[in-house]
Image 1 (tube, rainbow, N blue to C red):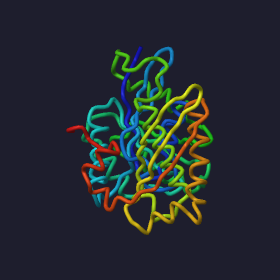
Image 2 (tube, helix red, strand yellow):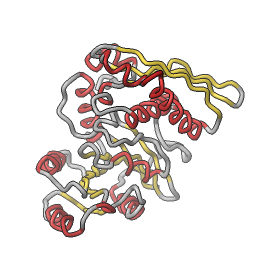
Image 3 (cartoon, one colour):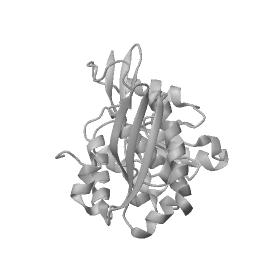
Image 4 (tube, rainbow, N blue to C red):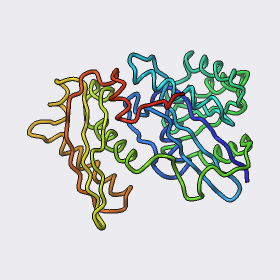
Length: 295
């Protein structure tokens, strides 16, 4: 049995979370087209007959503007500090820019093998993609380059099998049926946040947090009460919508996804509260679970 950790890093919207979900064949990390959807390390675990691979999903590269941004950058640094392999996801549709090349150069110093996954190849033009692939194949420090479409599950299994060669451990870190290190409560809060990201306007998502006030199982059903936190008073009516239509729609879609997660009926109540500049408030960040635990 070979085991080990593989960090998935890359620019925002490079397809890291979609790739992680495809690796473990379950949705353990939320996905949206908005930057900063992933805010911390999320582990996805895949165990088969000869290996256990622990994939570490990370926030997209960013320039920090607040305490939450600092936390997210720290999450990336923590993720790549002690892994068997660093998997760099690059959006093949957008092409490769100097920021991505400089990040690869930076990760070379970590000492771990670097594998590049060029994502979204199902929507990439081959004539534009080939020169970019040549650029990567000629770059020192890159062990391998793979083209994948996680959305269509093309090339993902081949990449996963190839990553096994970089595993260096022999100890099982998780039980065979584990797929993530996160709790159900965390998953519920992330599902709600995902639905807010998908429903609301561009200026809203960065300042949204979700806190689960109550999560209680009653027989075959769950009663869940959660608060959507925004940082500006002007954002609250947007999330609520006219006569509560927006938050009702968010709740409907969130409940459907949570029921799939919990395999049970769910009674979901959502509230919206304003916590001004919460992304710079250490106590609020801690309450929402954004802590580096002394790292």
